[in-house]
Image (cartoon, rainbow, N blue to C red; front, side, top):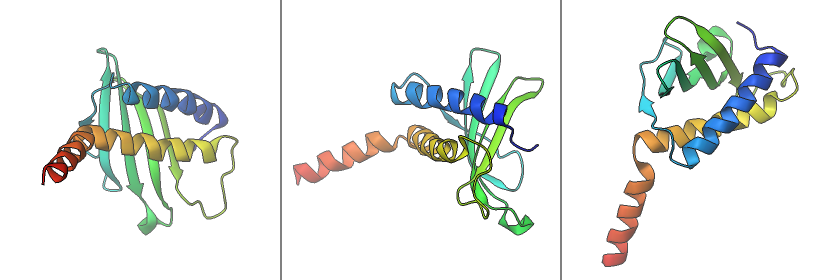
Length: 133
């Protein structure tokens, strides 16, 4: 499904909120199963019992497409929103807001990854151990 101006606008609003809530430690991200062979590092979070968000990396270079990040909002029945953006599109971005959203998707993916693997806590533990030497 190609990106549309509406999907880019909606995704930007949702991703901004997901970033804010992740930074505030109000969301608990988990590792999720990749939906297809082109996706990797899939992280998910549920809101209530109805909505699920996934942020993931993709590599479709073998199909002639590129590499980048995607976000998906779904219910148990259907996908409500799915946007994928190449990190470095061959011909540039075509819709307003795509460049900003691509950057926000990369940031959210990194925040979710750090949350899932407890990276901030582990870095602080390592720093404290180094200080104790």
